[in-house]
Figure 1: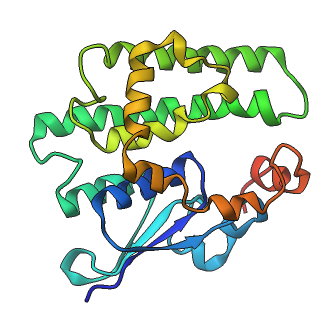
Figure 2: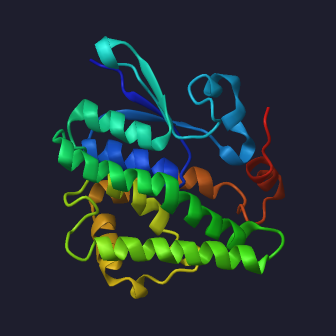
Length: 233
């Protein structure tokens, strides 16, 4: 029997991408918690598989040729799992390009910009009006892009795919980004449909109890130093 996939994880929008995919696939996996507020992402053993000191990462003991493989970066993990299992990532090139466009749109746009909106609205010690407006407005623009895209299709690439899995976690905290889903009816419909999936519901619960044991990040100054003050090591 093949050993389960090892998932190095903390319950954040990037981490949820991979629990969602694994739950949707129904393949066995074990969670190795990487408490990013305690600096566990800098442990030497973790850096061997995730040199960017960021979770998520996986080790698949049954990689290409039957040999173990490690993969870091959430988008790369989604593509790897999609290719391996032949689900949620189409083999047809035109269909795959559709998925890739929206996956990379999330990686380069929705995630970073929504994350900055969240940061400056929730965690920045100084409430800098320019930064708050800059990133709140950009998140709003990106929500509008999704809303238009979803006007004539149920999911971002047509069929449910890793693109939707990548995006959903970044829309869950929309209120902290200063966004109202009622302003984006097509996006709201998509949001509710994706969250209604049992695998998604199960996936976003993974590690919730672990995170709940920690002090709120907005109040945990030591965790903020670790997360927001990183320089080259």
